[in-house]
Image 1 (cartoon, rainbow, N blue to C red):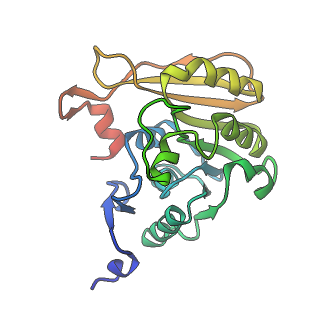
Image 2 (cartoon, helix red, strand yellow; image 1 turned 180 degrees about the vertical axis):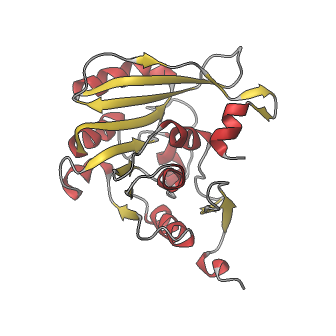
Length: 248
């Protein structure tokens, strides 16, 4: 048995992330990360000496990728599921990131009390997209909570980000375009001014299925809409930009 195999529990596997040799522990019976998390890690920017918090980090995919792609000083992932948080902690150990990445178990709705106000330069989140009965609700609570607003709402996420960001700090999120009007309204209500937006299209002739947003705490009203991000050139073939984001 290898040293890395000792990190694994029943049903788990180690997946390559194609960045800095980093890997991640996942369990296919639970919720595994998707393209949305990878695209958010390519959209977000954590500068040198900045500290970042990922709300609802799951198995830690976003802070691990940001640690690989940016010069950020320190990363924290907040996750309510002990199972996912445990995998995230072991992934940090696997990648020798234990000094640069902390995983904290806790509820997003209580994040404002768990961390000092205005203590982060950057907050990221890939929150649940669906409300009510939008889409099929998975009978597994952890999988359902990753997709549906069961344990927290979008406003809960924004409220936490607004409280924990320093003035001028940046909030990066990925969501669904069908809720775009609501997203902008809630962000603005908490003084997180949308400054940059990019729509993601599966193919050039399809409607967008994801939206990436950067908002600034206390920023002035003015938003840049970036060029569309196209995922596939044709079925099964990524565009060059997606290939670059993934690190292939």
